Length: 588
Image (cartoon, rainbow, N blue to C red; front, side):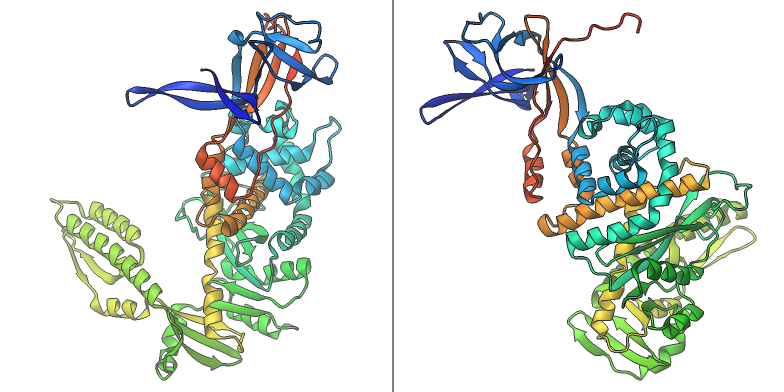
């Protein structure tokens, strides 16, 4: 690495800016890659470098203007506030990730979570700022999720969070992190109200339509002996029925903005959760006019009846099981299709204060048909391979067949398979089942007590369920909610609490991207900004002191473009410091 000067003339004056560049060989030629921008160093008094900067003297904490001169340049009487430096001994130290941490910290402050948790958590008797400890945990979950031990031993020291938050390595001690987790659940109810106000202020969010769904996360551990432990066997969305799990219920707006979550025991049935969640939301946000949109497995007949009988009634829009479609096929066949818009046609059947809306979307037909054909083709090919196995044992063949059927999913039910006692596999396509499936592809039977709504509006509301599914994908994918390393039930929920906060930061950035840089996902933005590093530039002086410049690298062109689209400006570089270096301790 070396210094490179760029000369620019303006208004008859010459300006020189200096950068640190690295020589790299690319395609047989040497190119200079920009590493660090140092700023302007003007040429004065025939050949001396100087730069008027604000330097903080760490001995007395006083900031003053000083001029930097090369070591072979004598300081004249007129240059009282000047210091001679040895550029040949300049060093670059402690590179650390700055850009993504800065953006995550900015999102935290946009949601006013610094003030909220600062008031709720306070400081410990030892002076630990619990809000900053929590901020470190959430940013870690957002940028590089892992265990608290990894945060302490590896990740924290590679980031610029100490510079951004004004903290040291004590906030990342394992005991400090665990003590912070133990404080969080008391803030849960107040947090939901706080976020509701922030979503309204930032994005003009409205809460007339709420999306409700559940997911699960599993634990690779033994069954807990404590009967009150929420880790239990149950229906696994991750296809890990061999593991204990907890169930997570989530309520979001159609934009994906979360309003509430609840952790439930792993053996909780979906249909038993709706009424309690309705009561919680009404308690937190009042009994306003709302439409609850749910998948077909969530409500029961009793729950829907109770929602209709409420004062005022609770409105709902829910998918229906296939068995109800079979029951209503005769009534639906008598109704004509009605075109409500170019890509949607419907049939409406009123019944007992409700409306059943049978919808067909050509786009959904094509999508679901292609998915079914792809899975069926792959399963058919695998059956052919299994049938050609040479002398397989019947048990071994059944195991392979079961695995193939599991991978094929619903497509496996369209093929009838038989394994003889001798281990011979025969299979054939069940054309009657294929005809039934083809007739129902891209068609949905919706059920609602919104009798005065247009069918296309109801269809649009139901399709917004993809946003709660996207929230679950973010929690399990980008935020890596699993594996969970905690054993205590309170800390397990605190782990979910931290992941929920990280999702709030992610969806805040996602909302901003939709309006300013559509098509870019939050994860891509964080990865881009992670390339902006911070490092220490140490320049020794001839009088035994050193000049310390804590500088970030200049963003590349693609990062600059992202910042421009988001209308973000990087903060100014911190001022240089001049200090007496501390000699290394020989005992360490």
